[in-house]
Length: 320
Image (cartoon, rainbow, N blue to C red; front, side):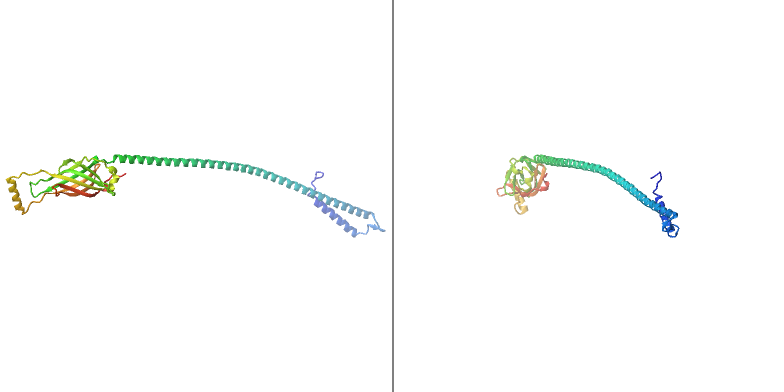
C-alpha cells in the first residue's frame, strides 16, 4: 500500500506498459535516421535516448517494486502460516490438555475401579467365608440333630428282657377222649449270633387266651441284643414245656372196661395226643418271627416243643 493505492494488482500492467514502451522506442530508433547528425545525437535522438533511459529506470523500479510486493506477499503468507501454525499448535495444546485431563480422569477412574474391584473381591471373599461358615454350621446342626434323633430312636427302641414276649397258639387231637392233654407251662428263649454267643432267658409268666398263651416276664441281661440292629443276624430258638392236665388217672372198673373197648375198636393201643402249635416272637410289641411246630412227649414223659434256628425278618425291625 503506497499513497493510499494498492499497487499489487496493477503492477503487472505497469511493468507490461513500460516494457512495451521500451520495445517501441527501440524499434523507432532502429527505423529512424533523424536522431543522428554528423555522428552526434540530434534533439529528437536525445529525446529518444532519454525516454529509453527513463523507461529502463522505470522498468528496473517496476521490477524492484514487484520483487518487494512479492516479498511482502511472501512475508504476509509466512506470517499467516505462522499464525495458522501457532493457532493449530494452540488448538493442539488445548486438545492435548483436554486429552490430558481426560487421561487423568481415566487414570483416576481406573484407579477407582481397581480400588472398587479390590473392595468387591474383599466383600466376595468375606461373603464366601460367611457362606462356608453358614454351610459348616448348617451341616454341624444337621449332624447334631441327626445324632439327637438317632439317640432318641435308640432310647425309644431299646430292648429289655421285660419287653420280649412269646405268643403260642396250639390245639390237640387224641384218640382217647379222656386222655390228658398238655398245658404249656414255661418258655425258654435262646439267642445266638455268628460267634455263637448264647443268651438264655426263661419265664413261667403267661397270659392265657382262647387257643393259646402269651409268655412274658423274661428276666436277664440282653447284652448286645438291646439294640434292634443286633437281631438282624441273630439265630433264635424257642423251647416250650408242658404238663398233662391231670397228673394221673384213677383206676376203676369202668375205666378199665372203657379202655378195653377202645383197644378192641382200634385194634391197637390208642396213640398219644397230637398237638400242633404256632409260635411267634414279639419284640417291643413287634411280631418279628412266626413259625409252626409240634408239642410232643419225650422219653421221660415230658411234653416239649422246640422252634429251632429261627431268623428274624429284617423288614419287621425298626431302622433309623
